[in-house]
Length: 140
Image 1: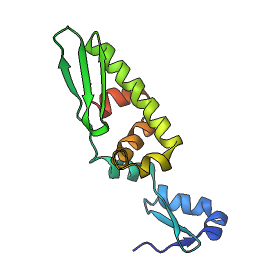
Image 2: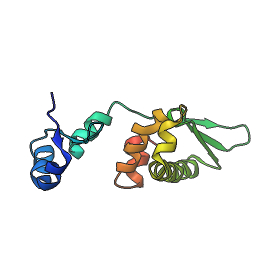
Image 3: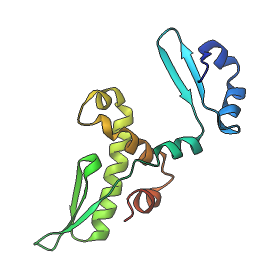
Image 4: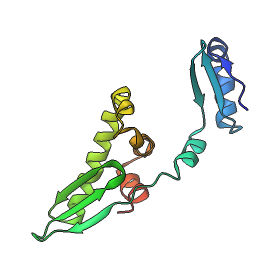
């Protein structure tokens, strides 16, 4: 069980707590007041936690010769003249969606049809570049 660290103590010991989370791979629970809590975890641990959340894009070749790529996990679709164009448009759209989602997180997290997007949004936001989104997360 994680023993909470008081917020004021965490502030004064942040470097040590950061080392615990990153170097020792031990999550740190920080509590402010009676109700607010946050967890400090390493990027490695967060990546492992998010690993089970996968996106499975589907590529559809339309009758008009265009290509549609859908990502059901995010209720998202793009259409373009080719797979390459559609994949590029999808990556750009998803980066923008992740940015918007995180800027207005309370709105999205309270929306029943958007709350489940959060782990996917985190994965997109944590991606180092567009290639990681395209190949690593989407497999396109």
